[in-house]
Length: 438
Image (cartoon, rainbow, N blue to C red; front, side):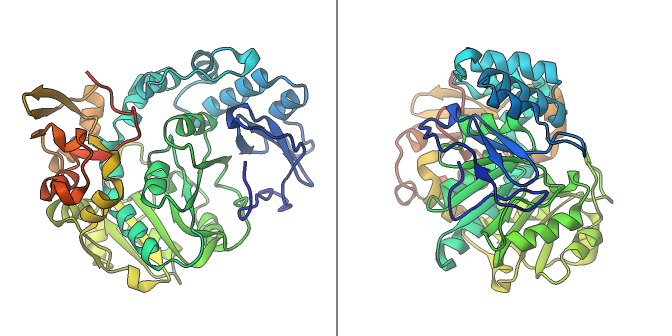
């Protein structure tokens, strides 16, 4: 549960949320409780606060809260997962109940029994196509282009931030970026927020033992006090929200005055994107950030720069270049010195993440003596078509010494090969057990 210094407030009335029961719970998966304010009672299901008001304007009834009050934790879990399925749009409420029930086993004891295999659990909870997409995030340009941005931000905060670090990962999905934030800045508190409760359960199981997860609706005021966060990260989510102007104002309220904003993978309304959402033009995104120094950068340019030399140029680009890009990245901060040419980001990633580096799951791996032979292999033609452009940055095949990953040697002993493999995205930071072994 949330503790100081981040206090949760009701997004509707603004009152602080108080926990009705002070019962100590060691295992967050067994934490079922209620958070109350002046206008509503919000459920905490399996350790995740769900700050959605589900009722109509004239009552404060919440089905999940009623089930918790009755001691029916199994019913509360099932109802919350059914709600997640209807909100997420990638699986029906019935599918969420049936398949998450398989994952969690005996509801009577609320015993969570994940399979221990991320891909299997994803395919149990999502449509197969979407599950494969989530598993293969490191073969998608949106996450790959975010890596150098995360490196730039974490390096800057590690060297310049005074006092405790608190980071907000808004629209965290199943937790890839939350895991990266916590791995790059282990001393920071990471709050990972998403609108889909099912995503958050998967995220905590596979990516976030030391991360706080929160289910919220970003279309209404954020449930945080002002000046709480050192940075916000929002990947591939902002263009799906309607109330963009209101959200920027809310983020400016909850962020510290000199915080860093990273919004990678913004769909351009003048470009072509699958699942486009509700995108703005480049000028439209920039108008939202009037008064906050910022750069709006073509995503492909960031990937090209990182692939070529391990750096990223965060200085503003010319309007015609922005307008022509299908996908953009916005970086903003009142620390204007941050918006500069960033170098040796691959080195920083190698230094911070080398114990976590593993072979990108998009590659099949075959051992030949002291070498590993890698060949790109897609789980389905639809995903390969969607990620076609990523072949510009990932080699179709590669060879590397078998002990480069297995030996666990620090990067200063491995030299240039590790940085090069990072720039190529052949190796990526993965939680233990993420990659399936032959």
